[in-house]
Figure 1 (cartoon, rainbow, N blue to C red):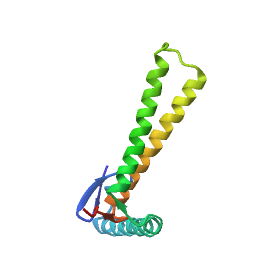
Figure 2 (figure 1 turned 90 degrees about the vertical axis):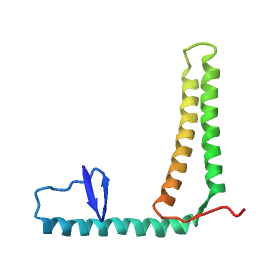
Figure 3 (figure 1 turned 90 degrees about the horizontal axis):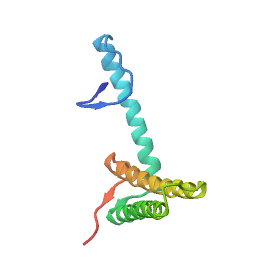
Figure 4 (figure 1 turned 30 degrees about the vertical axis):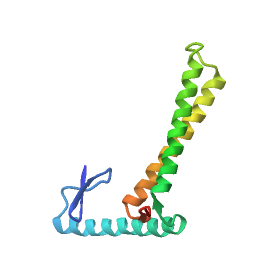
Length: 128
């Protein structure tokens, strides 16, 4: 389902009745824009107070941490399976822990990128 907001179209899971009077639809879109702006302003205020800015060094540290976690997860899985395809419960639990660490670090990287993309926190280019 596509939702018209301002001059851009975006897809989402929000319900928008198609048989409503055009004047009612415009009013509803106005309300929805107010709601979206409230969420934007809240995110910008809270995140901006917590994370003053992002820069290339921050993204590099997050990317390296996520890549390291992925490499550790894959390397341990490969090492565990060298002796055979069957893994113990302890080995499976270890792999689940390593995958979770990778998933969390990847999610933090993506969340930080999204915060910059949406304008919640400023991006400061590196000084070279």
